[in-house]
Picture 1 (cartoon, helix red, strand yellow):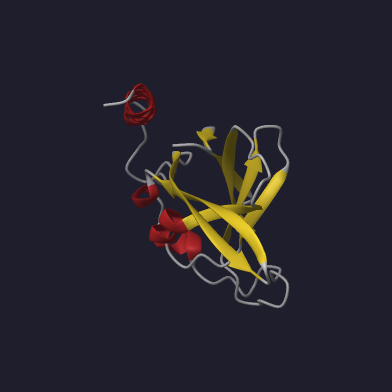
Picture 2: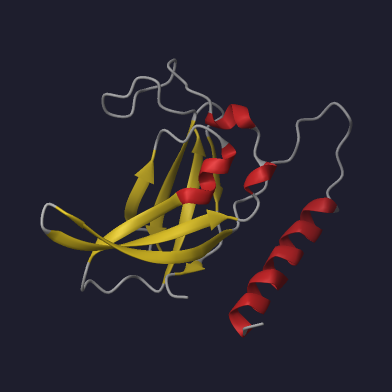
Length: 151
């Protein structure tokens, strides 16, 4: 096991241990944790004659999110021409807070396993990125850990 993998596993244990000690009564809403983001790999691809590198990510605890967070929300402002965009939007940021890319139409929590951002080939990626999940219905943001951009 690599040191990076060991650190990641330790962070997950600490996050989940801290969440499990929180008390709540039977009638309260479930506690929704912050996402635990990690890099799954990179992929080279080409669009309109330009070469790009896609940085692919997964959210380790994606099963902790209720499906209704990703339901179509036509009652909320649209995402461009998409009037049925999801209730929760997901945005990638570099460690300084610069937005890199976003998703406004994820349909289910499992879709958090296929999120990504891309940079043109030759552009040095930021060392770390994070995501923010913005639940537009409750006006709640969930911010992830900083995740590496290299394996």
